[in-house]
Image (tube, rainbow, N blue to C red; front, side, top):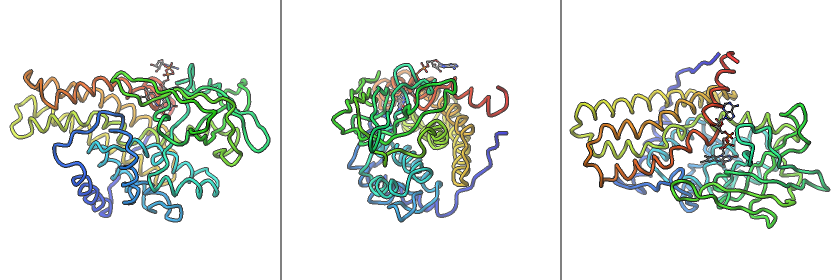
Amino acid sequence: MLQFDAVRLHDSSHALRTEIRCFLEEHFPEGHRPNSDFLSGHNPEFSKLLGSKGYIGMNIPVEYGGGGKSFFDRYVVAEELLAAGAPITAHWFSDRQFAPVLMDIGSQEQRQRYLPDICAGTSFSSIGMSEPGSGSDLAAIRTSAKKVDGGWRVNGTKLWTTFAHKNHFMIALVRTSPLSDQRHAGMSQLIVKLSDDSVSVRPIRNMGGDEDFNEVVFNDTFVPDEDVLGEVGNGWNQCTAELGYERSGSERFLSTFRVYIEFLRLFRDKPNDLQAAAIGRIASNIMALRRMSLSVVGMLEAGKSPTVEAALVKELGNNFEKILPEIARLAAPLDVDKTEFIQTYRESILLSPSTTLRGGTREILRGVIARGLGLR
Ligand SMILES: Cc1cc2nc3c(=O)[nH]c(=O)nc-3n(C[C@H](O)[C@H](O)[C@H](O)COP(=O)(O)OP(=O)(O)OC[C@H]3O[C@@H](n4cnc5c(N)ncnc54)[C@H](O)[C@@H]3O)c2cc1C
C-alpha cells in the first residue's frame, strides 16, 4: 500500500533555508542567468566552496566529515541550490547517493577513506549502471569482473555515464558471475577510479550541443578487494535499494524551473487571466510534488527503503517538468521572442527528452508503481 504521510519541516530547517538563500543571493544575485547544463554545470570550485560551508554531506555523521544533520536539512539546501540554478553537478551524485550508500553498506575503512573528501566537495563520482543494450533491462549487463589475486579484473563498456569525463570515481554495477536463469543474481558493485590508464572515457554530445554523458570502456581494469561496495553477488539488491535516494528528490521536478522564473520576471506584476492561471497551475503542481518528495525524505530519515514511492515522485515529477515550459509558452505573447524567457524555454525543450530517460524511463517506473500497488 502506498502511503505519503505529511511532513512538516522543523524550525531549524526553516532557519537553514534563510541561511542558504542569503548565501545564494550573494553568489547569484537577482537576474543571474544559470548555465543550461545538467544541474546547471560542473564547477569544482563552487562544490568546494559549498563543502567548506558544510552544505555537502549534511546528513553524514560528523566523524566522517559530514554535518550530522537530517535528510530534511539536506533536502532544503538541495532544493534552494536547484531553484537558484547553482552549478552543483560536480558533487551531486556523491552527495545524493554515494555518501548515504557508504553509510548504509560501505565498510568502515571505505567510509573513512571516501566520506571526508566527498563532504569537503572535492571528490566526485558517477553512476555506472547502463550499458549498450542494457538500460531498462539492467540485469542484462555484460561488464564483468573476474576474481584475481587481491582484487578483480574488469572488462566491458558502460554507456550514458553522466560526467564520467570529469568525475573521479564510478560506482559500477558488474557481473561477478555469469548470467544464469536467476537473472538478478551474480552482480556486484565496485568503486572504480576513472583516472586509471586502463579506463577510457569518451564524451557523447547531447542534443543541446553539450557534453555531459559518456561511454566508458574498461580494459582489464584492476579494482582492489577493498573497493568492492557491499557484498559480492548482492549488487542487484543494493542498486534497487539506492533508488529511493536516486528518484525522489526535487531535481526530478525542477529541471525546467528556470522557465517559470523567467515567466514570473516578465508577467508577475500584471498578469492577464491566462498568465495568472499558468502561474497558479505551475505553482500548485510544484507544491504537490514537493509535499510528496518531502514525504519520501521522511521515509528515508526513518530508515525505510521507499522505492515505489520514489518511482511515483519521479514519474509525476518528470511528466510535469516536461509540460511546464509548454504551460508558460502558451500563456506568453508572441513578442517575447528576444527575452531571456524564450532563450530559457528553447534550452529546456532541447534538454527535456532526457528527463524521462535518466534514472529510469516512465514505462519502467509505471511498471514499478503497478507492482507496488499489487496490480502486476
Ligand atoms: C541524460 C541522461 C543521463 C544518464 N545518466 C546515466 C548515468 O549517469 N548512469 C547510468 O548508468 N545511466 C545513465 N543514463 C541511462 C538511462 O538510465 C537509460 O537511458 C535508461 O535507463 C533507458 O535505457 P535505454 O536508453 O537503454 O533505453 P531502452 O531500455 O532500450 O528503452 C527504450 C524504450 O523502450 C521502453 N521499454 C524498455 N523496456 C520496456 C518494458 N519492459 N516495458 C515497457 N517499455 C519498455 C523504454 O521505456 C524506452 O521508452 C542516462 C540517460 C540520460 C538520457
